[in-house]
Image (cartoon, rainbow, N blue to C red):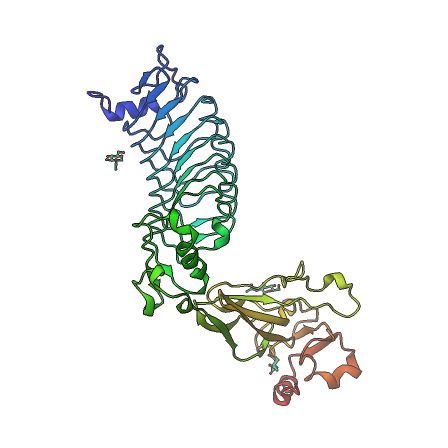
Length: 437
Ligand SMILES: *[C@@H]1O[C@H](CO)[C@@H](O)[C@H](O)[C@H]1NC(C)=O
Ligand SMILES: *[C@@H]1O[C@H](CO)[C@@H](O)[C@H](O)[C@H]1NC(C)=O
Ligand SMILES: *[C@@H]1O[C@H](CO)[C@@H](O)[C@H](O)[C@H]1NC(C)=O
């Protein structure tokens, strides 16, 4: 903080982008010497204008910078060290640092980053050290660090990372230090660490590790070669789960105790007939250890006469156009305002590291509309006042559709039935007959 200058005055001056830089070529209130610019702890909300293009080291820590405006770093092509720790950055746009091909060190510790978008670090071909500790990261998605071939240190400790996708670290062939301590990781796959051909230090402590079959490899790997990567302090990988292994060190648990229970899955009933316009919830209960992931999907079925290309593709995902009615996690299939398109075969799948289990479920749609209420009106009624019309399309595979109306087909054809509401007997007869399905 520049002594004697009220912070508010500074702020308002710095917020005016058109303000010309001082004659010395140093942003207001910052200190500049040689190729270093120091703007730390100045209550800045934006990167100040007027940073000399030749700057190699830029201190912007301990401010309140919330975002990197697009292009604001573009003139600073000579940057080697950029310190942005202890600010309020929430996101990094893809290509945020694309004009910094010489950057060696990037400090983003203690910001408010919740996620990292693929491409955020594109262009940092020389980057050696990336500090991302103390943010709010929850997931590391595939290919996040793809464009960092020289990166040697990646600091991700003290975040809330629950998920490290298998290809999240792809491309980090020079990485020597990976710090994932103090996160929320329950598991980590062998594939995720595979790209790290140069790894020398790995920190995984203080995560809620789930000591099951999926972590079997890690225990074995540390006991064998991986041990050299972990200092004695770093070897204390403590199980948080299952309860019988809680607080034990992964290294003290025998491999045969690291087990999973494959899922079993239950849907009741296995077939439901729903009426048009209704909402439907179907529960799928799964058990197993660890808690299985539950997914609903609609099974695409080729109709006779349709090309085989419409059939379900290999790999089990629904055919294009067939909406995947998937609801991951809750185990509940929820269908709102049911139409004929919802009818068909569904499948509930539960999977965990121990395996997968599936249960088929069938939804039939009752195309008959409820008997018209006495004072109601049909929206598409074409008839004269006092008459309502009931439109029914004849789907040959429609379930239970025409049971009640069959005997009228001869008279009126079966595309459309006209109901005279002035004859309540008709509706009563319909209701009384029920269905033969
Ligand atoms: C972070 O910056 C604020 C000013 O924005 C400062 O008061 C605080 O001490 C800094 N925190 C740390 C840990 O340096
Ligand atoms: C239900 O779907 C029908 C046909 O798609 C539509 O006309 C109607 O407005 C929908 N109703 C609700 C409550 O969404
Ligand atoms: C079909 O819907 C009609 C009208 O709502 C109803 O009377 C009938 O019982 C339903 N049939 C089945 C099988 O649910």
